[in-house]
Length: 346
Image (tube, rainbow, N blue to C red; front, top):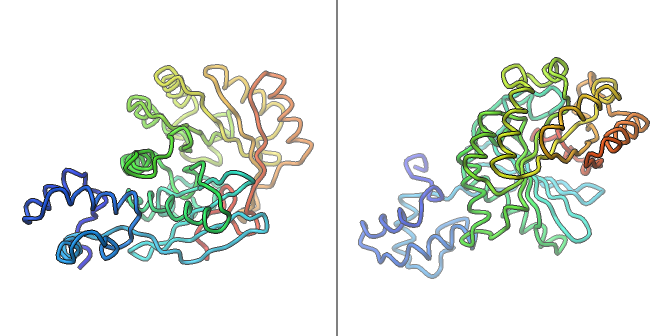
């Protein structure tokens, strides 16, 4: 039975070598197996054609490969593609491919569901089922990379952990997956092309700094007002803006990296000039880039997209304070693939 086997993607090259030697197999086969797993993206041991059938059978008897099966594929009128992946236990997660003229971005998930309950986010309504394994995270990237090449003849240039789940609550698996995505033994992608987005967990942000991460950090901020943020982001009750600020100052001092703030503009809630003033004040403690994001409906009548007038005024105020600010237009809204809409509904 599969649950009696081990996930081979959790083993290091040395551990694979030790397993082979203990079963009287040649140790050099370990590097071949490892290459099949991470560089050639095999989905089953039968695909490992340069090793003997007896060794393939041995591996199959003791291990499984945590591969993903596309359950549904939806293509937006703007060419964005959303894939629902079926996992080994029947659970569903979603990943999004966002192509443009000369690049492609993969938006990937880190958990099945999410337990942080941000009111504006569809995923938050699901609750948390479980963390994704290293292999499940890694193979989302592989599947979206192959799709970008096959459908649009584009190389995968960027990866964002902005799908389902809170990456910092699956810390070890996410960092191991990023390590393999960046490694020459894996996809060989520069960590500077990877962005991890978090609601802002101060303790874990400090851990990222202590672990000297090389990828980019984005914070889903959405308000610089303590009381207001707590109203629609319950995580703020136990991870205050003040604690977050201290963690980000620490992160910047240790890494030298500019932080990105994601700010979802909600009509009449956080899109006024006083809100912009609070945000500008909050940004004084560290170098920052701000992405203003359009709200995408998730069926909650409490929230609506900010008006063009308010959006423009908010943007202009931040620019007047010499802040780096961009307005991010949503992609894939017609297939529920835009920011905050991933809920594995189909």
